[in-house]
Length: 369
Image (cartoon, rainbow, N blue to C red; front, side, top):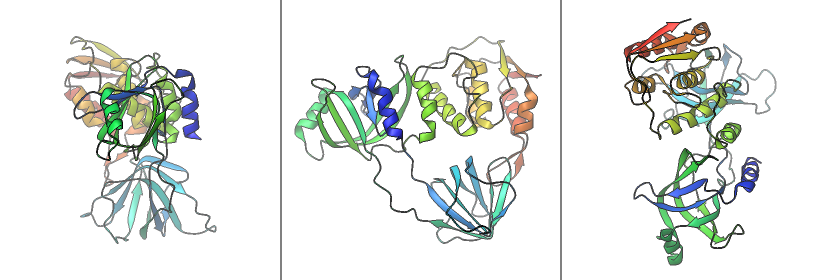
C-alpha cells in the first residue's frame, strides 16, 4: 500500500525531473525521471526474545528510536536496536517474555550469548531479563525492486543497454538524487545498480522503465512517508512545522534536515548576531536539534543532529560566526525532558547541560528564559 501511495502522488508530476540516477564515483548521470516505485518499504529487522522479563516501564508498540541492550558482562559492551518495537506473538497472559524487533547494530551480540541483560531507551530503564535469544526471521518475499518510470536515459546508459552484457548492465555503485517540487536538492540514496530489465515507457517516446535489483541499501520506512510528502512539496517556510509530530517522525524529519543541510552552502552571519530559540516543543532529542536548526538557519535549517555534530557546526561552517548570543525561551521544557539521559552503557548524564556546554565552547552566549 505504501508503494501505491508513493506512485499515485507522482502521477500528476510526470515530466518533472525529480529523480536523477547518478554515478557518484565517476560523475555524471545515467538518466532522469519523475516517478519511482519501491522507494519505501520495511527494512529487515532483527528480532530478540527476552525471557524472564522484569519490566520497569511500560513497553508496548513502538519503544524508541535507539534502544540499548546492556549485558552484565561489561567487557562485551551494549548492543543497539534502532527504531525498536515490541511484538505480540499471541502468547497466553502471564508469559514472562518480551519480543523486541529493530534495526540491528552492525555487530550485535556474540553468537550463543544468552546471559542476563538490561534494556533502556536512552532516557529510562525499561527492564531486564534473565536470558535472551535472537529469533531468525521467517522467510519473507524478496525485497521490492526499484523501478524508474519514464526515465530519459543518458548516452552512457543507452550504450550499456545496447551491449546488454552482464558486465555492461551492472552499473556498480549508483545514487538516486531526489529533488523537491521546487527543483531543490532534498536527499540521495546509494544504490547497487544492477539492471534487471527495461522496456519502452508509456509516459513518452524515447523514455524507458528501468528496473534495478536489490537497489536500495536501506528503504525509507513507511512511517516516514507523511514527512517526505511534506518535504517533497518544498522546504518548509514556517517555523515549527515539525512540532506536532511524535519522536519517531521527528527523527525522520531530522534525517531530511541533516541530509539537505550537509549538501548546501550556508550564509554566514556576522559575529555578534543574536538568535531566538523557541523551546516550547523540545520534549525529545530530535526536537532539540530541530529547534536549534530553526533558530540559527530558519525553517528547515540544520545545526547539528547530536552533540558532536552541534560542536562541528559551531566551528563556523553552518551559518554561525562566534561570538554570538542565543536567547533560549521556555528552556524549562528542555531541562525537564533532557536532563536525565543515559549513555549506551546506562550511565546517567545530563543532555541539557551537555548542549549548553557545547554551545558555550563554540562561542554562543546562552540566555535561558
